[in-house]
Amino acid sequence: MPWYRRKTMQAQYELDKKALGGLIPEKGNKTRILVLGSGFAGMSFIKSFLKNVKYDIAENLELFLITIKNYHLFTPLLYQVATGLVNEYHILDPVRIKTKKLDYRVIEAEIKEINIERKFVVTSLGNIAYDYLVIALGSVDNDFGIKGVKENAIPLKSAKDAIKIRSKIISSFERASLLDIGNPMRKSLLTFVVIGGGPTGVELVGAIRDYVKQLCNKYYSIDSSECRVILIEAANRLLLQAREKTAEKCRRILESRGVRVLLNAKVVAVEQDGVVLADGTKIESSNVFWTAGIKVNPVVENISDELVLKKKGRIIVDEYLRVQNYPYAFAIGDNAWVTSGSKLNPVPAMASAAVQQGEYLGKYLASILSNYTFKKPFVYKDFGLMLSLGRFKGIVEFPNGWVITGFLGWLIWRMVHLVKISTMRNKLGVMFDWAMALFKRRIVTRID
Image (cartoon, rainbow, N blue to C red; front, side, top):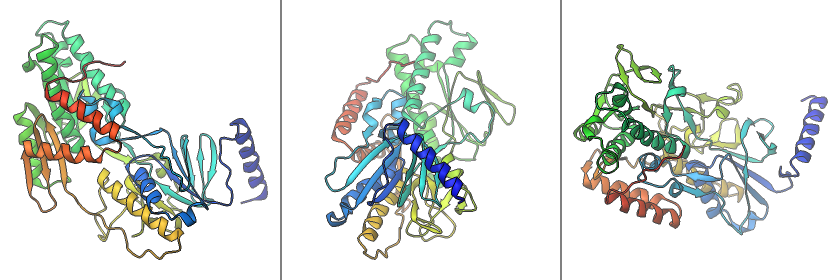
């Protein structure tokens, strides 16, 4: 880099530091590990690294987490927040972990750019240098360029999205209760459409079916038969990542609960008053929720393809989760293309996979910083698929193809997810919410 460019960058750095009152941490002699993102991958890495790093080297290390939010979101229960089953604060875990072993800090800032060649990250607080980098920024919603999705459909990716969905459902009931039966607007307000037949979509639509029934029976003078709950999937079956028999069982369970499932139904537009399909059909609805797909985080997408090899937007990593040509940088979770022994099929972009990668990388990086040769490559373990499809209805697919449905599947789902919640406070909170739901007591207030 030319001397005048370096001088300009240094001058800007000094201005940023002065304006922010020293918020940007100085890069000293300690080895700095920078973790980007507080999702499942990032937090699993931090917990694993803190557990495995040795005291004799910890004093020479500093571990920084950069995140736009000061909490970890337990995404598997997002749909339950959206349907009044769980309080939103019960799925938010703090990211600050008190430790005496090493210098662990959280920097709440927006990540704008990764300069992987010069080993610094551009944030809303300025440039932050590193020695080792862990890219765990997760994914964002993918609207596939379909007209009107951003403007007229609510996604389910954050706690705010879940609250919006819940508020939208309740608001629709409030408005519909003021209209006469037979009014076209009342029908639109009482029609709830979920686009996307993956795990998130099927769980959300099953929970919505239960939620609207409860709203009808306990809070509004509306017959539940007036409500329509519709799931739209462009493919010829649900749950493309599951076995075909599992997908078929899922469809039958949803339909038995009153959900209308539309397969081979490609959405071409989402309008203010409904969804338009490729065959010209329009489904009139004031409530459209989007769970149709994800795409790579824009920060990762903007890393030059000339510097970093990618596939479908995800960074290609080796068997130790290292970015090719940059052994001091790692990518995990939705940001990484990990084959785990297979040359064709990548590890799925799921929370369980992100957790496994984070735990592995924590052990690996702790070992190499201790000058210990770590030869065991990352191997993904498939634990199957678990779904909750409504009150007392669930489905569990084990890796060997064995499938459990009904009450037992629902119970297994709850037990497994309760164990995975990090803090005891949130475990107890979710248990209380679930207990109230058994007595048909859900959150029925909206926040605008």
